[in-house]
Image 1 (cartoon, rainbow, N blue to C red):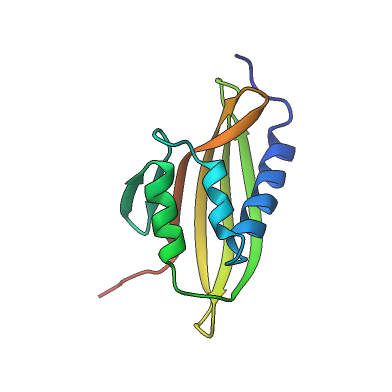
Image 2 (cartoon, one colour; image 1 turned 30 degrees about the vertical axis):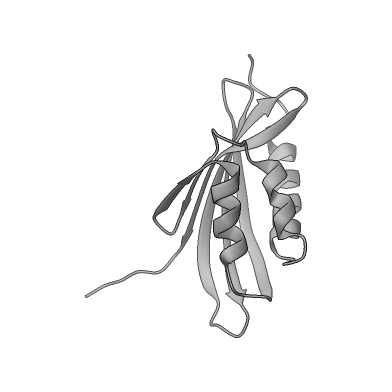
Amino acid sequence: MALNPSYEAIGKGFVQQYYALFDDPAQRPNLINMYNTESSFMTFEGLQIQGAIKIMEKLTSLSFQKINRIITAIDSQPMFDGGVLINVLGRLQTDDDQPHAYIQTFVLTPIGTSFFVQHDIFRLALHDTV
């Protein structure tokens, strides 16, 4: 497969769609359609998860109801299998908590004429210094 020339548009469009679903608790369960039943991986704050069902168990267990999100940057790169690597930098505030910077990285893998999330890594940018 060749490099996808539309990688930037795909990255931006995916991020908009993903967060529109994620940020609405009523829509969040629909994210299951973006992950593969067995081969998707997620690392959420250091916790390793595999498969769409287990990923969704984690995402639907999050207790916050309100999200304020500011996306600072979306960086995308084409991959040699036709996929897209996406890195998101932003700030996130849940319910009445303090806002925190976060980084989320996605690897989209082509399947037919679409993509699924092969890898998803999420981390708040908190620094535990002693």
